Length: 466
Image 1: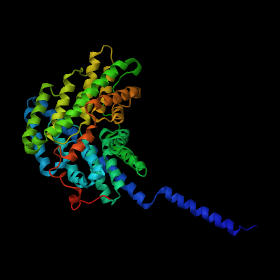
Image 2 (image 1 turned 90 degrees about the vertical axis):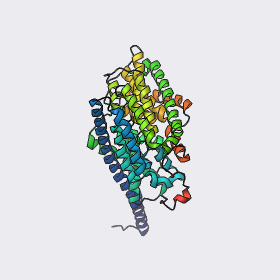
Image 3 (image 1 turned 180 degrees about the horizontal axis):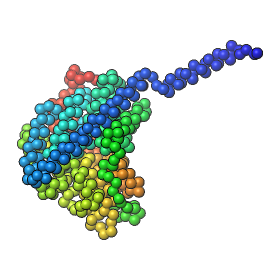
Image 4 (image 1 turned 45 degrees about the vertical axis):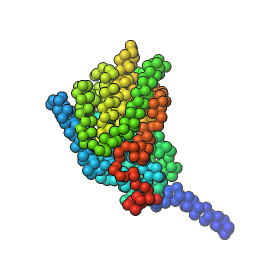
């Protein structure tokens, strides 16, 4: 029997150990697996908390509906007093919980402002955002829970990274992005929307080393929601036929209108927030009381359609239970503006979808033989795109929320991109970027004395993520 030569044995050993090293590299180091576990555990936690948030928000909206059903005059008292109480609790315990939360997340993702993370990403803020947003819905304020869900998700994932001692700055940024995107995914039960939101709004682009882990975190949060709440479409599965080739004039008209209204709404929200900052700073409770009274009066005029997130009225429009008119979208935009100016926690996604549904339904009602439901869906995507100026996120969200009507895909894309282009004429910068910039420059009232600190003075009181 012929024996192997020593040279052949050496070559065999070399390739054997080289293959083992490659396999270990493909599997990842212990540090890589530690990072993955932190992302995955944090994503499951985000899914659990955001689903609990959804249940609590729905229960709060139901309580307000019962109050309104008892007497349409009760909100004239309940809404102003509750909104004033929310501002008092927020200023007393967690000033960083005000507003949508997405501008705060965008701000702390910038390297220049990483020292603000202990201010805007705390567990106290998670609790305050959760409870006070529910109180806002209990008051009938025109707000959504999706922006707060982004803030809650980012804060929870940031905390998971601290507990897991993941201190690299790029990992900390990826955790915040994953948490915010997982919040969107869980809030809408729409994982694809969460991924697109992470790329388009929060990150701009993925880090090559963390993109797979980030996507897995978003999917995990969606799986948790699916296990707890089951498979559902946020707005059901409306029956519609809308062909782009046949209905392009109505689609373009709806998109242009949504772009004009959405751009004006964004400009009013950004500019108005700066103009009322003095009132918010010096007379926070009286101003919140006044805002609550305006919200209640708008709700009274519209027989309750502008109260809350707008989900019920938007679904009624999609199911053709009510006829579209111009009163609802205009008053809904006004109610949302006033609610945001008051400073109470709450987001813009659901109210924007509702206002867009109102515009689309109003156009459909005015055009003979038009697909009213189809234009309503296009209006939702177009108006949301005009407000946040993120067209891909907008049409993907609406596509998932309405049961993935792929025959509407081209119409939604045209509506979202055209509305975004028109919106930029009135509001050049995306609304969340503009609000984050105003927050950094102190043109709005975020956290008393927080932005005025310099990074050098703040380092003594905070831990750097690097």
